[in-house]
Length: 126
Image 1: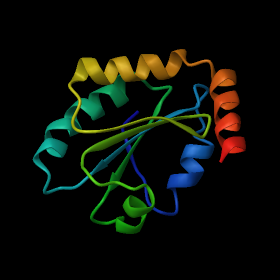
Image 2: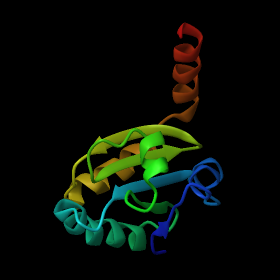
Image 3: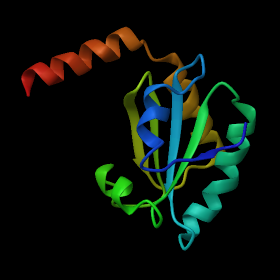
Image 4: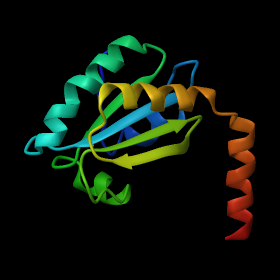
């Protein structure tokens, strides 16, 4: 499966209900003028073809400035990983292919019951 362009209208529905059994959505925030973004793009696309049970979304920060602002993107590329609608990973900078594979595997291995408990605890303390 190739990556999909995400917009302000499609971002939240995609993250909340990705339509894949794994519940995993990886999002690459990028811009066409960004060299590291252009270097990361083929790595991201290859992973999208390999991991067909994961949604790979791309947000063009130039076209979707409000969305990038809402996501507090201050450096590109930035990779975010969501599982079951919960942000579980966020990192600026282009990742080499082995590091991206590691992120995907670690997101797969998460115990989401523990993650939900942790999110609930943080919310109750806020």
